[in-house]
Structures are given as C-alpha cells and as structure tokens.
Length: 113
Length: 115
Image (cartoon, rainbow over all chains, first blue to last red; front, side, top):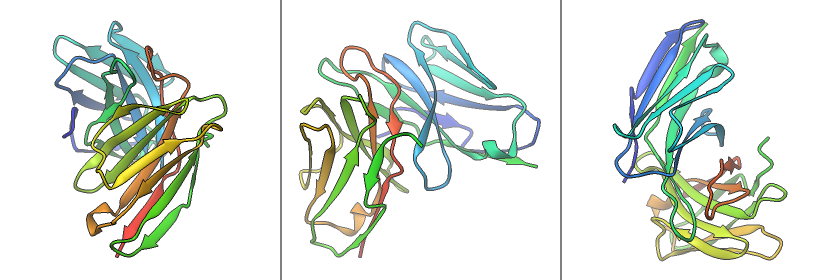
C-alpha cells in the first residue's frame, strides 16, 4: 500500500502561475523526497528534506515539511510548459539495515503555454 | 542522464517464462534499489542491495529474486511470469543507504510485457 497520498491527483495551470502539490503520509520518517517523472520515463530527483528540516529551496522549487501533521508540500513558482510531468513524494523510513522509498500516487501537472 | 543504466529497455515474453533485468549503478554508488511501477499498484519498492548484500525487502514476490555482484551491477530475475507482472521495472542507486539515506538516481526502466 502507498504511504503517501498526494493532492490533487491532477493539476492544470497556465505558464507563469505557481503550482502547489501536497503530500500526506502515515508513519515516522527519516526524510521525504520529491521526484518528477515525464511520461513513461525514469524518475528525476528534485529535492530531499530531512525530518528535522521545515523548509528547503532549490531554484524555483520550495518544499515544506510538517512532521506534526505528517504532511509536505511542493511549490513550483513561475511554472513553464517543460514542468509538465507527474510529481511524486516519497518517504524514507530507513530500517536498521537499509532504506526504502515509499511513493505516493503522484500528481499529474499540466502547464499550458 | 542519471548515470544509471538498465537493459533491456523493452521485453516481451510469454506467461510462465523467466527473464533477467540488468542494472548498472552510478559510479561510486554502493546501493542498488529495484522498484516496480504499474497502473494499479503505482510505484512499489521491491528490494535494496548494499555492496553486495541484501539490506531491505519490500513487496517482492517469491517468484522474483535479485542479486548484486562484486562489480556492483545488479540483476532482477522474474520467473513463472504472469500477466500481472507486466510493468515498468526501475533500478535506482545511491551513495549511501544504511545509517543515512540519500537521494536515489533512477535508471530509464525496463518495460516488461507478459502476453
């Protein structure tokens, strides 16, 4: 079963607008990561935020993490048509011997030119 | 280009058959992960290897097995294939994966179609 639930499932915006995607999870985590996937292709790592961090920025991306609410958000500012993709949050609840990522169902973002 | 390579890109085979998927991690990465992506199950973690040893196991069927070789490349073996095994299989690698976790770099995937 999926650890994360993402909201919305689909989002359609105009170029230049901001896009916000939310992720909720159920168990304690070591870190939370966001990935992008263009249709049928491999996942691209966007940003990693550790459980003791509250906010992180990378270029046009801003990620927040609220461990008390078990939720995270990804904000893409000044979106571009090239940002059209599926975005996944993934929680890492590492085990004593290894680690694993548990992915949400993803948000399909469409940025219209 | 993530630096992770997977072969083959596409594989079409019949039910009951056995296939082997291959993955080469990024240079210097010791951890290799396998994931399955299907329409009904989404992205599911299968298994992790670190420097040749199995470290974490997810929803991997008994019909599936994996290993990581001394040169750090990994293979995922799928046997007695069923129609429901049709999916995209991704390999990922990271520099860590034990006490501290790092971002994972994904390969382009192998699309398996079982007919």
